[in-house]
Amino acid sequence: MNSKNFIQVFEYQKLKVGTGNFTENHLKTLVQFNEKNGNKYFIPIYNGVQFNSYVGVVNVGGLTIEILPKSDKSETPNKKLWQSVLLNMLRVCKHIQVDTVSETGLKKKHNSILEVYFEIFLNEIEQLVKKGLIKKYKRVENNQLALKGKLIFSKNISKNLIHKERFYCEHQIYNKDHQVHQILFQALSILDTLVTNNLKDKVKRLLYEFNEFTVKDFNSKDFENIKTDRKSKIYEKSLDISKMIILNYSPNLNSGHDQMLTLLFDMNKLWEEYIYRILQKHIDFNRYEISAQSQNKFWEHKTIRPDIIIRDLKYEETFVIDTKWKIVDSNNPSDDDLKQMFSYNLLWESKKSILLYPKIDQIDSKFGYFHHQPYREFENGFKTVENYCKVGFLSLVEGNELRDSEVLVEEVMGKFESVV
Image (cartoon, rainbow, N blue to C red; front, side, top):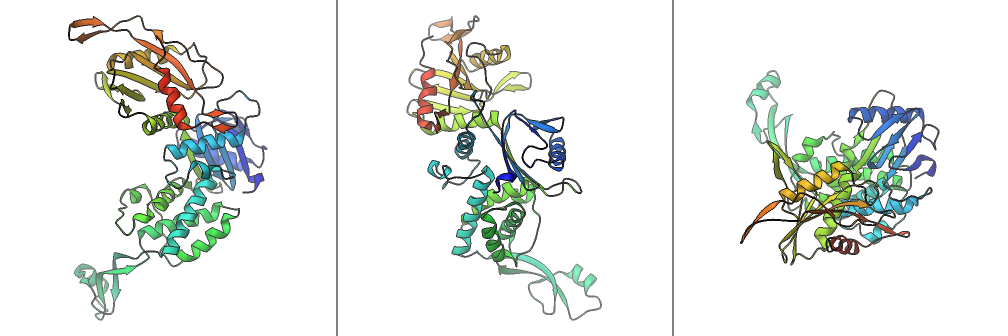
């Protein structure tokens, strides 16, 4: 990827026309795309945009803009480090749904996140071609000179009233030109318009293998109806990335505007899912049960859902974690956050809850005491139960390295062991 066509920014950073190769046309396309999506991705400002909590990558008119997460106070943050943080979070949360992308593999030098997806996709297609593209049966209808398959009487009468020598039939054919390969073909064709680096030659070589297949445009409903069988199961990885490429590609936002490919993630949701998945992977399941987005009735038809519930089977306790991707002072949670945690404690009969934020240099607070003491039923009758919440912080990096997820889990669970 040409460095002139690649810009890296951080969440909440501003990008103005004239920065790198960011032009007025790029800005117009971004603003139009943002408006079509409820203005959730960034805020238009004079002669530019200001990004918010969405991170990921946008390719617009040949320019790649990568938006990275950041939880440090450095005026010149390490872009490569925070790109690695984002890639690792996407891998753990299975937004890069390929098992072969290990932590070691992610250390390979890539200019942008899109390159990771593109290279994985092209490698998958390359392996499929080497193994031999599979054939499948499909139904076709056409006019022919010999009766083959099932004659469709109504269409035969309307189309062959004069040409009595022809038959309009429905029959099956067995070849490689089926839906799965047509999807891969469309995704490859999109990549051909986007990549400009050393991947371009690989795209061209692979397109040659698909050049006799039918050109079709697929949408989200088409992907919902795809069913893989024993023969086509090996296509699942390439179909996952094809879906991402096709559904996030906007070739004609407006006449004269640039084409786009977007891959954007809400950092708040990504942080929540990442914490849940590393807990799920490394927690001691002989002692703990863990669930995400558990639901409980709150008021009338409304429900309430904490991010993560942990049940300690040994001591018969319940803990609540609510994740927040924002920078706060250690001893100053917002009133709204505290009220939310108080409700979680009551409804899930939890004694301890934690608001978990990204760490810069803050220190965990002590468990703060909610003055209301709920009554709960025990074997010896009803009695009051203490009710606590604390603010906790977790750093994903140490120096210029990613922290091991197992160490992170130990640290999270250790926060509940603090003396109240």
